[in-house]
Amino acid sequence: MAKTRVQDYMEKYSDQPIRFTPYALKKTGLVQSQVFLKIEDYLLICAPFQISMKRGIFLVVLSAQEITFFQQFQKKLCSINLTFQKTGNKKPLNLFLRGTIERIGPVKGKQNVCMMDATLKACPPDLMEIIGDYITAFEGLKSQYENFSGKAIPVDEAAAKLMRFNNYVELVLGATKVRAVLAALAVNSLSLRISAAPPGLAEGAPCSAKLYFQVYQFTANGKVSAVQRGEGDQILVTIAIEFTPELIEIVDDFFFRQSIQGKGKTT
Image (cartoon, rainbow, N blue to C red; front, side):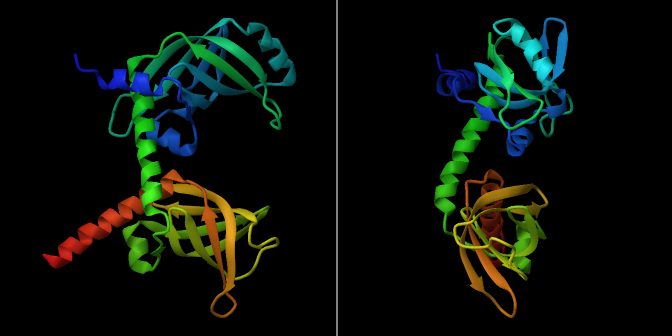
């Protein structure tokens, strides 16, 4: 008998977690405000940190005294409520999970934030499918990242329109934010034009860029790889950026739209 997709996902990805970045939240449809963890008579509103088919890690705002209180429930049973609202589905998907609290403790560097680690008794097929679909698509993005690396797109008016760019970028260097102009982009690099150099701008400096597109608003993290003088008083800053799934989707969509546009011109 042929394996179902869910069975295949269970064999491949049972131990592989999803970390709930803004991208993962949007893609899975998890409603962040409707994640609840119940321990005995206590119902806690949680922020999802990561989940796999076997365990979930959740963040809860608690005082130091409350964290100490809840630590008595380690190794006790719990229940978890998750709500997913996928694009195109009118009705939300509500999932109820049972598990055991394995660890409760404060998050280092985060005041009044507690991490609760729970193993799951069983993973519903709907959740297996959500996790498997996401991981499969994410693995595909990694292949596209390799294929598109180094393929810079000059961002002129026509390119900006095709990629649905909102013409707004911020270069963030330490505590300083500088409005920038996007000159070119690739999945592994950005070229920005700025009018004044912020403190600490130098090759090798860690930085990030906030980019605003119609489909995504996101942050690309990386390091300054080059600083050059441009026209007039402008400075051209090149950033080597880390793997950023939103940008890979945008670049892939741009090349697809460009190819369709090219075919239209030849017909």
